[in-house]
Amino acid sequence: MRYSKNFMYICRMKIFRATKLILLLIMMLGLLNHSNAAFFSSKTEKKGNLSIPQPSDTLPKKKGKTPMLYSSSNTGKSRSNTRITFETFQQNLEKAKRFYDKKQFLSAAKYFEELYPLSLGQPVADTILFLFADCYFQNKDYQMAAFHFKDYTRRYPGTTRTELAYLKCLQSIYNLSPAYSLDQYETKYAIEEINLFIQLYPKSSYMEECNAMLDELRNKLAHKDFEQIKLYYNTENYKATQIAAKNFSKDYTYSAYSDDALFILIKNNYEYAKKSVETKRYERFMECVDAYDKLRIHHPDSPFLAEAKKVADDAGKQIEKIKNRKNKNQDT
Image (tube, rainbow, N blue to C red; front, side, top):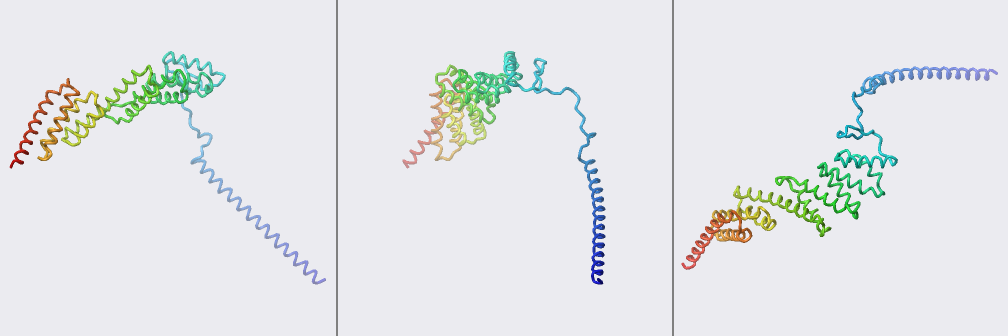
């Protein structure tokens, strides 16, 4: 009995201590949660004050009218921002055509741009794309016009408008060609595209227009190359002048600058020969005479012919002197 009482006592003491320890832990956890809540509350308040906008902190709305999706300054009217749907397709197509007929091309283009995706698969689709491209062309936005007309020829290669669309694409690229003094990438690209058109449509009724554009574009390239020849000559870079002028004569035989280039070549070869060593003079004076012969044959009416003849005649005299000296040296 004594041992059982002791055992019961020990058990009660252990339960008491365990209960006391659990209560202590609960109190500590409660204090910890309270402090953490206070800490995070203060952090949230600070964060809210610094970066999180409160309802009262929203930006004020700008005064004035709300901008519409599309507007027409020409008519004084504006469209609502409701997009075109299949139900309103025909109505908006008629509006677009009215804008186009009134030459209000920017307003028409905005309608056509939205109408086209809805028209795919319908007979009217190619008409919308053509008119859309032409809006840019008529508004002299040639880069966009070239892109959309080219797209038309790719999407609709067999329509009655395909050839005309191709021509308008060429005209757009032609208008993008810059002044001769600038980089001529667009000019060369335009020439390539026109040549391709001529191959595709050898009997085209637009052939005269294409040839006129080709002549002007080639003349622009010739002008640029001719200015380079002049620069070489004026800086007394005789060898570079000779090479550039010879290449020019091959590439631009019928250019407006062809006789100018030959005249510079005649003078260049004469001066080059006079400043050369004795062993090179004969060859370079001969090149001067040869250049004059080309000028005389290809450009008999050139205004430079008389002056060029004087230079070539003097070059001929120099050639005779060199021959005589060689003969004397051989005799001795």
